[in-house]
Amino acid sequence: MKIVNVVCAPGRTGFFFDDQKAIKSGAVSDGAAYFGDTMTPGFKSIRQAGESISVMLVLEDGQVAWGDCAAVQYSGAGGRDPLFLAEDFIPVIDKYIKPALVGKEADNFRELTKMMEAIEVDGKRLHTAIRYGVSQAILDAVAKATKRLMSEVVADEYGTTVSETPIPIFTQSGDNRYENADKMILKGAAILPHALINNVDTKLGRDGSKLKEYVCWLRDRILKLRTDDSYAPIFHIDVYGTIGQAFGDDNFKAMADYLAELEEAAKPFHLRIEGPMDAGEREKQMLCLKGLREEVDRRGINVELVADEWCNTLEDVIYFCDNKAGHMAQIKTPDLGGINNTIEAVLYCKEHGFGAYQGGTCNETDRSCQVCVDCAMATKPDQILAKPGMGVDEGFMIVYNEMNRVLALRNAKKC
Image (cartoon, rainbow, N blue to C red; front, side, top):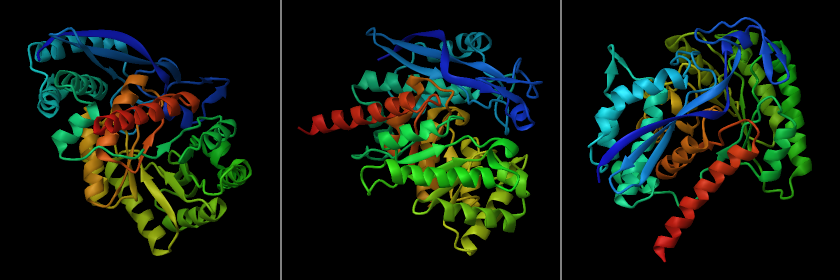
């Protein structure tokens, strides 16, 4: 079945674009806004409304397949592509994507995305957000044209099987890390709370005491609110490099000492720490994470380290995995471009004994998150992010419900 048209519509995302460098440098938080000078190219204010582009592929029988182009909250930081604004990139899709797809048969996801990802403009690949959204639309088009679920298309083309059980969902709290943690506990989230520890002075503490206090509070809150003693969520906290800022990016002994304190504070719950340092460039980041993992493992500290900053592309994920830089990679879906790269990254990590966290960003849309769920159901990562937004309820609902739709439809086929 042929693709006969490509139609774009500007949209909003579930969160904001934030100038991470300005925030780390002490921008003043005021309600939902930040005040101060921008520090990342392209930003007109430290916090801007998130933007997306819906890419709709019209099939010859009138069906419409679609995906949403979206970029991460901290665009332009940590080696990522620049700020993604709809008015700048809809013309790019119309000029380069539309002529490449119109007239093509929607019969093979891998081949169509390979063709799309090879498109270059002035010697550069298309923005990761474009490749992300267009690949979602291609997956949906192939599913609709062949009367399969998106998860079934992925499983068939990559030689996997669709999961018969839910993937553990990781919820993120944003700055409202206390009330939102209650929501996570009440909803039975398997992994929580993210916590957004992105400032040393206000959130980590120069000696780490503020985060340790929060971990203790979270432990006690779960023990108080849970109605079933078997409910034992994993603690997963993203510290945005602040532990390295406080103790030294390559001071592995001091960082490990602190992680041991957090491990003790979290008991009886298991702890993951994402982005313990941000070394400023890829190779140094890999070496620092590798060194910290070796120190943690040597001392038997039961804390998993999750790679995030500078682990952006499929090639980066492979690089960190091969060097055992941490215990798990956040596969930040928009940063990898085409969703095909997310699929391959998850499968590579699983094959090489490295944790696979299919993540993304709060700054996505309902549609991009639904497609991510279908990909996860076919590849079985260790966890999947509840997204978009930071309010817990909406993102958890979108991911949880899409996952259960896949399970129900697959079960119905067996009857």
